[in-house]
Image (cartoon, rainbow, N blue to C red):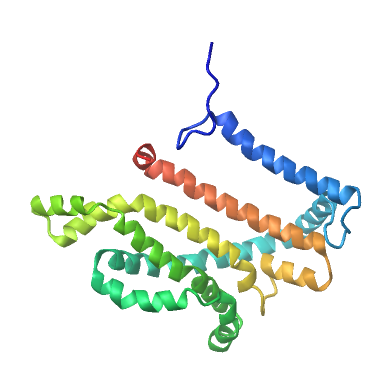
Length: 266
């Protein structure tokens, strides 16, 4: 007689149908609650339109081309804003994680700025950079860069010191140790950091498109707020969530492709 798998063992893999079934069940429960609350009129349409109303708005935006225009504009801003952040955060984070001098040089300033809300920089970025896409890149950069640097530094610090000492005994110099030992060992964690910080960039999208935008998912949400078009607001939120989920799973798939050995060691 087969023993039923335990679903609550610490760090134990469970059957795929349980894993995916649990996630789908929670989504189904959420949708059912939404249908009941809106269908029975328990919540006013102004506050919670029905899934049907949101679906009709989706069809309208697809047919008019608005959805594709907004989605492409937002994807462009997210991609470049996050790339600028990552291209600068990666070398600084690696230096901070390996050399105490650079940690002492950068960390006080980064710790100060990372607690400042990105939305507070909107007036300054408009004053300095104007109202074009460069200003929006700057807001996305501010929202992700400072946290990303510290996370990459922590990824590098997870490499055991013993590996570094053993590498020295084999005659490697510090730059060879950095390139051949530390970076390969830290890359899985750094890749996860990329995935997480890209998710943060999506959450700053509405902030980036808050002012002086005429296209984009964030702009569409803020515009709908002025006219109490709640179905448009909900649709925009759902589209942002869906696009963020797609990018998240792309990183997860590439993680399995590049770092399969790291998954097995967890």
